[in-house]
Length: 389
Image 1 (cartoon, rainbow, N blue to C red):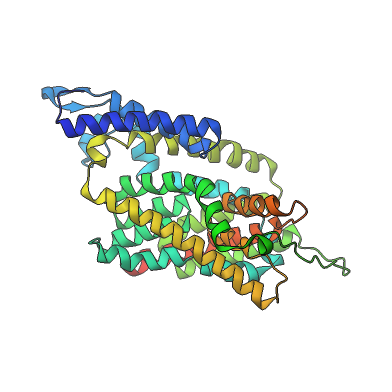
Image 2: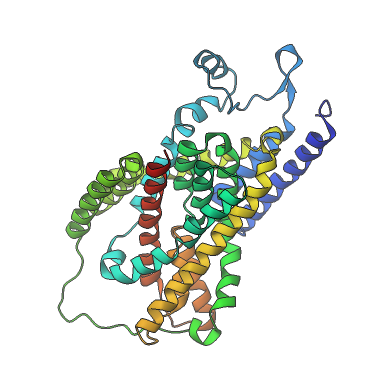
C-alpha cells in the first residue's frame, strides 16, 4: 500500500472509506442497494488489495481494464478473477443490453399508449440535460465523443451511458460509468428537493380528474406487442448503431406481453439481477486510485451533476406546459418522471405528491412519462453515436 506516491496512497484510503460509506448508505436504503452494496465492496477491496506482481510492479488480482492485446488478455484472464466477466460481457456492451432487456420485462407499455402525447412531451423536455450539457462539455475541453457520453448522464439511464461511452469515449469509459451510476442513485435524494423548489405545495398536491371509460375498451397485450415490434423495427432502421439496445429493450417487453412466464422469470430474476449485481461489482473494482486520478474526473463530476439537474428542470418545465395546456387539470410534479431512471423518478414524483395530498395518485401518468423517457434517451443515444462515430 505505502510503496506508492503519497497522493495515490491518500486517494486509495479515501476510496476505501467511500466504498464502506456506499455499503452503509445502500444498506440503509438511502442509495440504491442493488448497485451501491456490490459497488462499495468492490471499491474498498480494489484499493486495499494492492500487491507486488511480476517484476515488482504494483497491481491486483481483480481486473486490468487497460489490457487490449489478445495474447495479454488470454494470459490475464487466467489470473484476474473478474477479467473474463469484464472482457466478455462488460467491455462489449453485453451487460448493458442484458440490463436493458430486464428493464423491458418490467415495463408496461399500456401507460404510454394511454397517454402518448403527455408522456412524450414531458420526456422530450426532460432531455434538456442530454442536449445542453454537450456544448458545455465541449467548452470544458472534451472532444465530441466524450461530450456526448457525458451528456447522456442527463438521461439517467445507466445502460445508455455504458453503451455510448464504450462506443465514443473508451478512454473515459471507466470514470463516466462510475459517475453516472453514483449520480443515478442520488436521484433518490436530490430530485425531491428540486420538486419542492420549483413546484409550489398547492400545485404539488393536485389530484387529477379521472374520466371514466364507458366504452369498455382497454389496451390489450396484443396491441402492446404489435406496438413494440413495429417501434423496435423503425428505431433499428433509423439508428442501426444502437440496434442492440432497442432489440434488448423491446424483446423484454414482448416476452412480458406474450405471457411467456418462463422467459419472464429468466430475464427478470436471472439476467436483470445477475447483470445488476456484476455491474455494481465491476464498477466498484474499476475505482482503482490510479484509474480515477485523472484531471478530467473532477470536470466529469461537475458535468454529470449539471446534466441531471438540467434534465430534472426540463422535465418539470414539460410538466408545467401540460399543466397550463390542460388549464390546471394536471400535476406538473409528474414532469420529473420524464427523466428515464425507471421506475425511480416515477416513485419520487408519487412520493412528493403523497406527502402533500395522500389521496392524489399520479403513478399512471408518471410511469407513462418514465417509459417515454427511456425511448427518447435511446433515440438520442442513437443520434449521438450515429452522427459522431
